[in-house]
Length: 249
Image 1 (cartoon, rainbow, N blue to C red):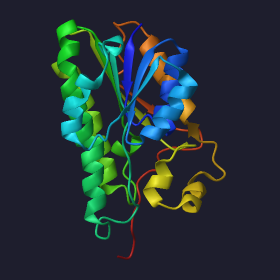
Image 2: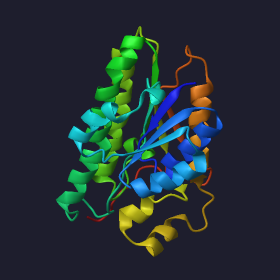
Image 3: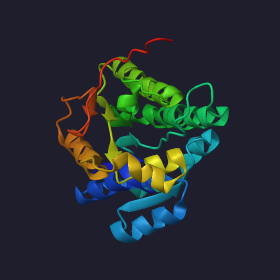
Image 4: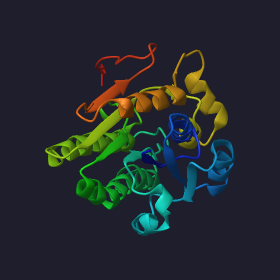
């Protein structure tokens, strides 16, 4: 059975993806910074789940990752670049630069480094699937989205360019672009305030981590000749709101 590597596997989308794919019969390598959370997940999922501590901002650790994977979890057939974050919602002139730096290192550099590390083996085998977790923020700008939205726009374009470079190879690439998703730590991390995070989802029937996991399960289940370049997912309660105009400036 195929082996899947999922980053950001300790909570939210990553955890739900691991749970779903183990149920589907895959062997799953879950990486995250919080090893204790991964070990708890292993107790739930069993021996088909391999927990590995990894901070995707540590490019040297990413290079060393393949050497830490036992033969029973090789080769890796599917890479799910899920690790990512947003920090703050301040306007660009007020946001701490460290927030931008962290988002770029996590959402862009970590993602491309891991892809660059694992892709050659997929090409050699002429088999593989790379699924990137983007966001509708990469398409639709909103106040305070500044660098977070820019990082997700990068992920979208990187995914499309991977498809172009891999034309003629049996390697699929998909960018998943979720909208408002609740039941994860995304807003808790963004605001550093659980009460403020909860307010984002109050009164909204939002998309869940399970919905994203089910989407990935479906994508993987499709035949090798079938590639979804990108898939945009919003709750029914959310839609692009249109352009805004500031009057009497």
